[in-house]
Image (tube, rainbow, N blue to C red; front, top):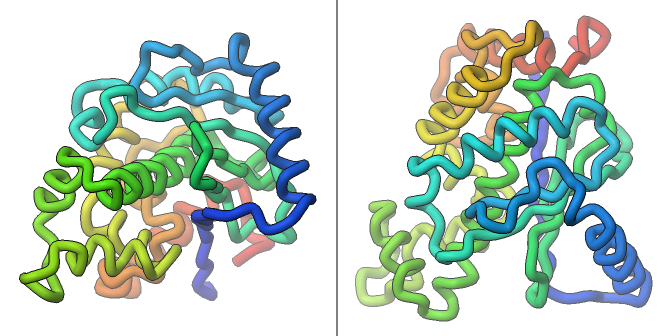
Length: 261
């Protein structure tokens, strides 16, 4: 079986570069305002608020249970803002199934925009939940990053608490957290694999307990979470047999079948 690298793309967009992007964002904000009150998962009292603008049929039920999981105490320790943050989901069409989703954020945004590839309509509920958990971890990293740049005390303390190496002990901002964040998608995936995989497994395990569907195979929880992390150092250390097992679990959960072996 040829290796499949199902990417979960992360985009950190600081500047609007042209008029078309401005128009797209205006349309997004208009769409968001229509969905805010009625979207499954929205509750202004929650730390992680999910607004669903996607047309994926099974997503509302996934968001409902995942929102409960995300707002339990184990996750809140990572939040550096007392108000948490909001994620808006919407559909896009990519050329292939290889990129499941991406987060877009601009410097003046008040929420994170999460694009979901329409190929996710083939995925089972656990794969959808794993994709959302992965993307929300990107949001967590970005939230910590932007607040640390502003010298916010809790964000700086959180980064120190990660226990990452410093390339230059005299300069806090040479901490490996910033080095990896500044490497883009690959660096952020490295941080997710080093810092968050145990927590992600707790979240997805808890989701499978709450979310009762025949499509969920709880034994695959640890495998599915490697989606998008196949270029990390931790994944590369796995045995070939472990990698084959992971790839098969991902293919099955995403509904891709033998046609993509």
